Length: 502
Ligand SMILES: [Zn+2]
Image (cartoon, rainbow, N blue to C red; front, side, top):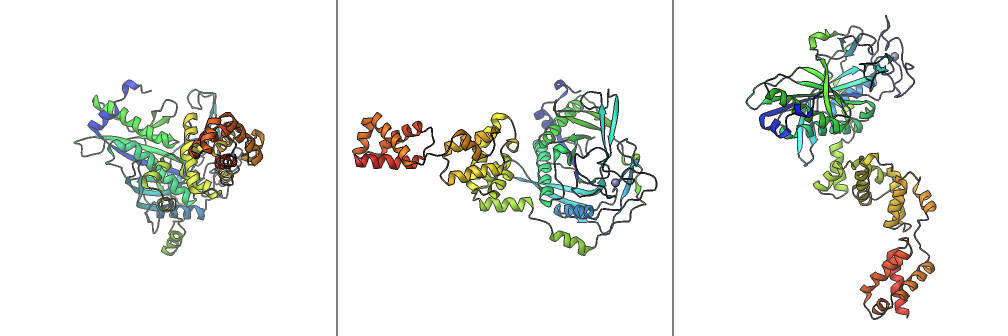
């Protein structure tokens, strides 16, 4: 375990070194069936119920390529501005691990389906950083090991292990960047922003459900440091298991500070895989990294080569949806927002929520205002992300519609939203249960108006003598008497009418 004392201060790391990143993102495709057999791929199904001789690697079983998997791979490659191979093959990556029943992983080695692309990434200050893509290749996922009896599910100290092969053979696309240099202090931010942009892209393509928490999007972060006068990259470590955007940022920063401390004392960095631990927000040593030779790659003899025709590639290009950055530009214009306003709501994690709220029937400016103001406050108070708040865009849209219909005031609407956040049900149920409807019955309002005027005769006199600005105090008093359930505009009208009569 690396203690804080073993870390170099971040500023000092930047004074002495330049960071170099390499990001490898694995995404599970959302195909109905696995990459080389007809087994289904439902997440969370009972263990070992989605298996067959092919994905269990039984002798003599012959794989067949999933056409949708190839299509998805090509569409991802095109969206990442890659060239698409005219001809490529699968390769066997040989290694033994209990969760990989064939003892090799069917992957691609020196012939990836897509290569040489780029992805423009939006940083927090609105600037764009271009990340060059080395390759995107097809492979299959492994099964899952469950270590029982140890602490925190680790193999160390476990009494026994269970294996679930449901995930073995699920199609994966691995997207590998070229070395990312020139980020300086923004290295952790660039890493997070890249994974975030890639996630948005894959979601827009509808090729994966991109759930980092369920492992359908996983990032391995390669980090190394170069001294300022160096001409070659330093030795890198590869941090695995980074399963949230925040963790990507923290893992990169942690590795920079850890490596800086080692290099400063004349030590050398071990080329190894490391594991990111959420709880301690640090990385720990995994295994010494294999080199490509260790895997004894060779072309997969049981699968035919993939040779996508240029016509097919162009047909797939035509299926690309509006991509996230195109959509952002459109929304920014539709909603009439400045670059800064738009960036703020993206950074607040509000974009998708606002879009969904608008889709559910709310005007964009109202939807935006609720998410970036009141609900952001609520999320901050609870220490959660905006999207984790227990309110759906549909429920918020209902509240906004009720305000527009004059059935809720803003004050009442907040109470309804509070009720939704407290798990009290649908907005309409909460209005009924808490008695929050606007008092629109004039006779009830008039009673409160008369009472308030009688209680403050001097103000009533001022209004009668034409000082209508004084009505504000009476409006306030009426709102208090009706517990905020009156429409303030109507109350004001009634006060002025009443004073004109008398
Ligand atoms: Zn199977």
